[in-house]
Structures are given as C-alpha cells and as structure tokens.
Amino acid sequence: MRYHLAPLYCRPWTLNGISPRLIESHYENNYGAALNRLNAISEEIEQLDLGKTSDQSLARLKRDEIAALNSTLLHELYFASLGGDGRVLPDAFASAIAKDFGSVDRWRQEFVGIANGLAGGSGWVLLTYVPRDGRLINQIASDHDPSIAGGVPILALDMYEHAYHLEFGANASAYIAAFMRNIDWSAVKLRYEDAIKVAPPRPLEQKQFADVPSISVEEVREMLKSGTSVQIIDTRPKHYTTKAQDIMDGAVWRDPERLDEWIGTLSKTEPVVTFCVYGFHIGCETASTLRKAGFDARYMSGGHFAWKAIKGPVRLFE
Ligand SMILES: [Fe+2]
Image (cartoon, rainbow, N blue to C red):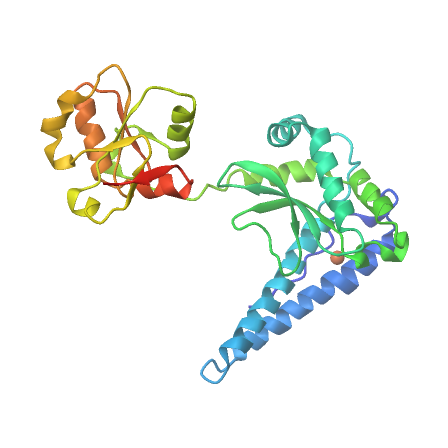
C-alpha cells in the first residue's frame, strides 16, 4: 500500500493570526514526515518474511504504523478544519452541538479547556461523531492513543508543540484562540452530514421474535428504582438453574416448561417482564405466550447476564 499526499485544504494567506510560514512548515515538515514514515513502515511490513520475524517486531511495526497513519489522517483533518471565521455555526449544526453538549458555549468551553489541558504536552483535541450513539463527543487523541473505535472525527486541533511553537512560543492559549478564530464551520458541518450517514453497529436481530416487545436492563432497573409494580419472571431452563448461583433481585424463577401451571398466578393488571440466560430464546418465547394470553409482557433483552453486567442487584438462588 502506498499512501498519497493530500494537498493543503485551507488557504494559508486567508488565516487570521496564523501565518502562512507556520502552516507551510507544519505541512511540509510534520504532515509530510508522517506520510513518508507511514509509507516506509508500510513497505517494511509488506517485505517482512513473516516466518522469520519475531512477533514482537511485528507488533512494534504495527504500533508504529498506527501512529504514522493517525498522524497523517489527523493532520489532513487539521488543515481542513481551518479557513473560516470561527464565529457562526450553521443553524442545523449548532442544534446538533447544543443537543449533545447542552449549548454551543458549553461545547466551546470544554473543547478549549481540553486543549489548554494539553498545553506543554502533546496530543490532539477532536470533535468526533460516534455512530453507535448517534452523538458528538470531544476527545483527546495522541499517536499511541488512537481515535474512538468507529468514531468519525470532524474537527481537529493539533496540540503538539510543532503546531505552534515557531510562532506562538510557549503561549499555547494564544494559539488555541487563533485556531478557534479560524475554524471553517461550513466544512465541519459538511463532514458532520457525511458522518451521520455512517450506520451504527448492527444490533442483535431475532426475526422470529420481531413482534415481541423487549425492555432493556436499564429500563427495568429504572422501573424498580421508581417503585413501579412489575412482575419479573426468571425463566432460565431448569437444567441451567441447577448450577445457577444467583438470581436477579426482585425476580421469581418459574420453570418455562410448566408455564401452564403458573400462568394463573400472574396479574393481568401489572406488567410482566420475562428473561432467560442471555435473552435469546426462552425469555422471548415466554413473553410471546403471555402476550397471546392477554398479559402486558415484555422480555428483558440480554437476560440474566445483561442484568449482571450493569451490576443489577442479585441474591442467592436457592
Ligand atoms: Fe502537527
């Protein structure tokens, strides 16, 4: 794989308080160096005789590769973040920021605060879209501490000293202020529009239970906390429960094979939540049967282990 140089995105002579000299040096000496390093590492990896290379050497090269690749990608994003007047966020994008940070001012305060916190050290401050949660987040990234998995960074501030020392000396806060004055918000907004098209990771889908409503473990926890009356039925199979040591606090165990015997003890005026070990099958099936019998039943997705994973209370199962 040969990586190709991207031309400078912003026009250096239009920047306010950041000189072309600084951008030229940064582009040539740091971005260029990262790309050349990346190509050299990539070539070295391709030419390795994997039968004769130690796993440690391979791992070291792969670490160097991610550092050089991240440096390349983030420098490209950094130059593409500059060139505007930094002031007015396009309306739709300002609402997205306000939704995820409370307000644009709060976003700005957090972003600048993180940058100031990195002054004298090194790293990147990024505004990143996380498809899993459909939201924006400010984050720190450095060469060895890469971006959020699956995240799409849309704005980057370079806080390595090489990004400002030449012109601002140790005055990192003056550099940060200059960066904020030059953000190209219309370009950031376009990148945001691209980022939100990235689909979240595919959720677990169980087509055969598509019409049975589920409830998350967090929702069940909230129900219990708020004192909502709910009948929680643990329907882990009998063979499984013989080795089970704990049961969700607030749940009663009922043998799913003998539903006919216990269905009459349930109330139709209170909601029912059923679950099994992992939430795949039996809990869903029980909820489905109960719904057909007229109960307001849902299955708890993820089952017993999802409840334990959120540290939901359990008691000894006897
Ligand atoms: Fe840089």
